[in-house]
Length: 335
Image (tube, rainbow, N blue to C red; front, side, top):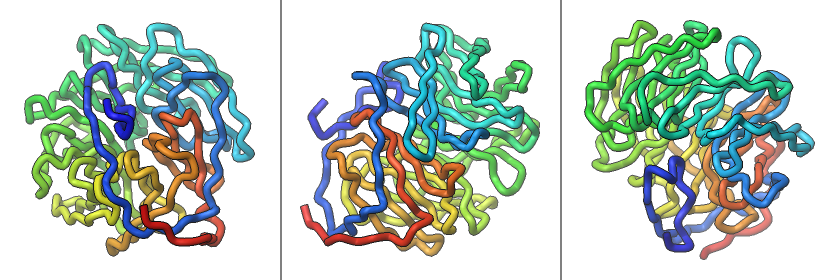
């Protein structure tokens, strides 16, 4: 890969090289703090707000799960091998649940806040689970990137799988919607999917061709918001399936993770743009450069402290943007 390419999830499955585009004026904010993760090769892949007041993460390179306190203290636990963790979420049972895309047998993992880990095998071989979220039915729901299915697992470890109608759709992110359904993105299918807790799936095509949707979250406006990695857009979809897209100022920014902020805006990570972006529910975008160059910012979440936290896959750091404080601007830059 060229030096500007990011480290993509499921690197064992994918080979994608993205160039860094031109950068328009961006506000240089001092609200960002970065915390190094101990160890030479960790690769934080996903982050979640934990039940213990910490932010939790999984790292695929090191095969670990860990947490970081609001003050920046990091603790890590080794996942039983083989381990290739991809996504993480808090469960209704007070544990952390994560996806493990190990080959040939993939798993869903559970970790207590004390680091005791249990793994449950998925019946479909090479299913490569990625996204995971807590559902309105008290179960955990996940995407199978290679299995082309949506799965659910009870807190006792019983797994059920539902095939996606579009063949080879490669689902990634998933979230619970305001309508009581689960919503997910189809990276190659170029669609947004909706699945009921009974397993009925509907799909909605994205206007931009080859947009490669990556992650999805709830917005304060009652819509679902998602990133379009290749189209360089942030988009929203109503629960009725109507999609609106908004172009990001920085070209080739590769937006990946997205989260709903406590300020009512949506916050997203730009992997190639090396910025944290904010978009209002009316579509106004603001971008803030990350201090570490080529950090590989990827996943993002609103933490228990109300601030935005994000994973820097290439830099081996966890970053935080203090959204609870007024944004302090130092200057404007044009690269």
